[in-house]
Length: 445
Image (tube, rainbow, N blue to C red; front, side, top):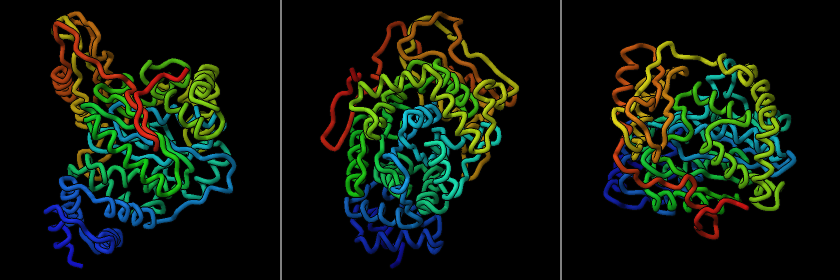
């Protein structure tokens, strides 16, 4: 096979045979195809998409590029959750211990930041000593011991995806439905989960901003799950504003701790409880979502979720004292308050720009392999629809230098729109998608 010809045909809208797809991606996995040619092919996919046969073959190649775990000997129905990426999305840090505390095993293989969005692994590594680079033996052992484990993707599980994930991050090819779907589902199939709950983000801060494309992504991943015998449920949630208040690794861990303590922002708590309810039903410990939600809320309120997170942190080498004193987390030396320049209503938060500002501060990666500064970030304390008075605090920037703080503050002021009249606000949770179809989300109970 000549890679140039495959790239050209996909660029022009053609369909590759399963053999061609297999050869192309296997060559890349084995180091016989250079990054620049795979980057060109990914860009062609970004514009032309993948036919169903191409997508199915790609997922199969990605799954088979490494080990496929068999967790059937461990008790319980193993259920994972995956978000398609957002700004301020620290749900996994609350959700995994919460669901595990209620008896559902959660083998969670997490990702790093991608584009303008944060990554669960980067957030966890803000906890002093916390290890996400576990061996598969450790992964199984900790899952059996604690009922939950949060680890980074290893070379053993879908290693082809790991390489493609990093390449997509720096080549502007993230926002492709087949590439997102194949990336997520190959890892989940390979890690041995029985069921999966998806958090599909839509809105200006999501990789897939449009609702119709978000639903297409959900249906695509549900279809892949069905092909591999995994039950998949998706909730479509709003990313036209950051989730919670904090954007940045240590800041988000701190906010997750507050939520585990029974406090935290209302929107973060609501999304977490909605996803937990789905996971508890799939895991067979609740009859329906209403019963599951009541149980999840109780576990947040009485400290069971917090204590489960304590066990997870300690088992993975971290300092569990962060749950009692978040001041242990890294803190930036400079902070600057962003104030409202006029009175009115918050009508828009440019959430993608907020994520980019966090990356510019050092909370994410602008280039492949760049180091993360866990201390820096933003706290945005307003939401669309809020009324403000000139001079009110809108946000706080946490930075390494005064210059970086001032630049971020100026950019953040431009990203938050204030108008005389309030504008429309997206529903926090808009749709629920299953193999049976799409329904408007209704609060269970």
